Image (cartoon, rainbow, N blue to C red; front, side, top):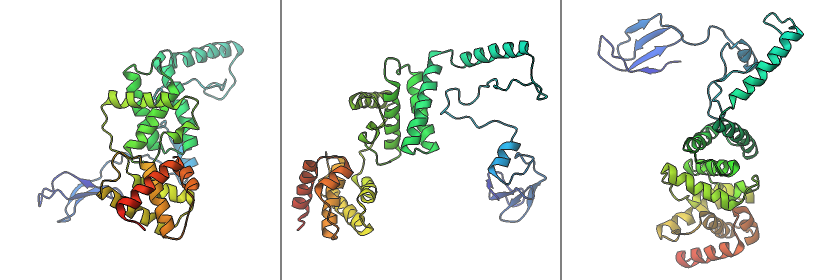
Length: 302
């Protein structure tokens, strides 16, 4: 395995240097000069052939993460009442360790912001499990929530509402085709409160969001409706034509995607009812009919 280095070769003054970690050498990729050798390996001094073996041999803790209220940096007193040699401690020491353990747990969340973050990160784990959110997205969500907490804007507001708003905003920033309604079934707060928190985050963090493209929703709706790739491609073509003629301006992307799929399914012989498409798109049948008429009239579809 090799990687580039920005140093200069003393022979040909070239910057194209590579590091061979197996030979512990830095080599010029142009003239072949060994620029440096016997380089120090900063990796572990042991080998592991499985995840379990690596975890057992590791002498360091897990990396820091924003998804823990203390970023994983604090320590805890274990619940095993044994000393360093594995022997059981005396009853007197056991009572003392119990008190130390209790105060250690209390001091980890002695501030209100720490208690808030501890509760929010537990909720984030629940949402991540239900919504199948990746680790990278969880980090981004926790970053947004921490920014709002540091601005003291969580006080007086629902933790759950702020957290769902952060999840929705992260999906928008990463062009993930999700709507606010997709998160409502997992929440116990009103959609209105979540929308208010969402607008608050955008205003406070000065985030400029682009309008979601209806094309992003096509693969998701096709999978739910079990439509073929031909229908998916045809729906994308219809949406591109609609965008060219500026039919999509001011329209909800889910409604446009649903109407385009309705037209494409008819043209490709995979007809779906308006009710089926409206359920998949999360809009009313009236919206599908209205967007369908716009596409048919402006694009002269027969």
